[in-house]
Length: 221
Image 1 (spheres, rainbow, N blue to C red):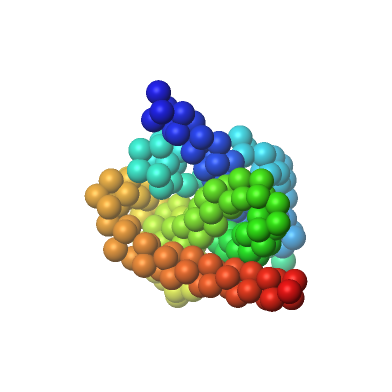
Image 2: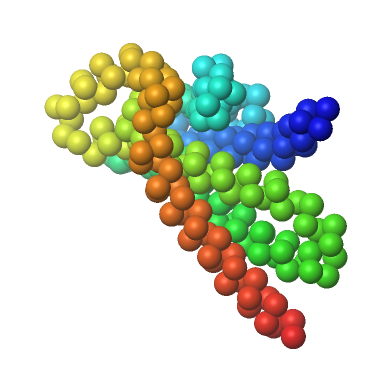
């Protein structure tokens, strides 16, 4: 009974954090494509923060099984882009992870402010588990999506940086991308590079949060 109660309690914190990280990530892709002149994300109903519009069944299943997964890619047509199409695809691809890293940084600031106020008003500390999950998911979601495996963002960034003659490799990998991702996740290969990078970013953000907390606490004296 205690285990069930603790599990439900954890769900209350990590599910909203995950949905926020995922929704803002996909919204950023669609918004940048829209600003570049592509109406496809708007017509597909993806310029929204509604998580139901961004859920990918296989990615969601992986989230449940191994706590890593992906959202449904935002449809983009670079033929509509104003200016360099390859550069546009790089911007669209990087927009999602950049949004996650921005949210992670803002979460670090929120953690510092919450820690400061909890010293004066103890109920404020109750939001801290949610903020910790929000930081964790945004960093891991951002780093994970930079992996160069279709349909993740890293593949779009990489293959638009490479000479166009290599683009056929992307189309071949695109067919098997989800299966490769499942293999990587199920075997735990992602931990060899994902955990150290994400851990370093999280530690940096926490150090920033601690520095802000010291400033707030010092200024209050």
